Image (tube, rainbow, N blue to C red; front, side, top):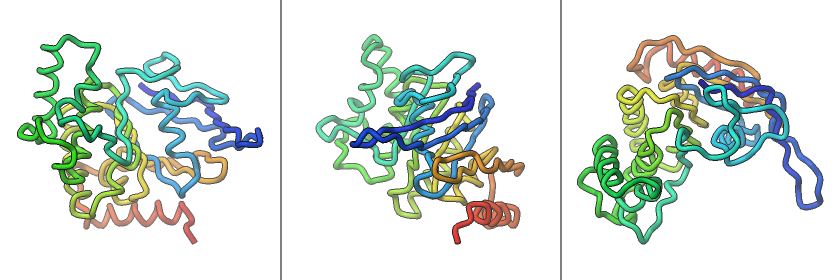
Length: 245
């Protein structure tokens, strides 16, 4: 489904000196799989997500989606950022419509109503962003990414700015959406418990430049209990591998 083949990414600073963010990253992700990227700050997690989305191009190697090179943004790939990034002057429905401007108006209306129902916000189509809670605003951002019916959904720490209770509720909601839609999901997170609860595999990045250090299979039935001994054990293994000392 998604192939990251020997990908390296370097950036030039103001003096024209190259700094390598990622080096020789190799990763294959299957259809309908949920994979989390975890690692300390600066190891290239968000950079890797931007390469998969087509927002950045690799300095070396290739990103392949269903066998084709990713050369730019595509409707097949939806992305949700840490902040909702909603236009404050547009109501919820119009914020979502921004992803649909190439479609006929009737199709736009159908898809907006459909996706708002999926994220539990059918009654807020005409609300302005300032009238929404943080969790509701992030649901709108997820709706905007899903309304194109992508085969791959990318999430860049989408819940990190929310309070703990809202974060837990949105984690559960995301799991429910995945059960319904079965998109392939690639998630960047600093929350190790979130990674274990949601993922089929957890990819641990380390170093500067970032490299894949370890890939951990999460072979636990869903739904997963946060307090389960198996979940806690995997959390401890990931934290130990990250070497946070």
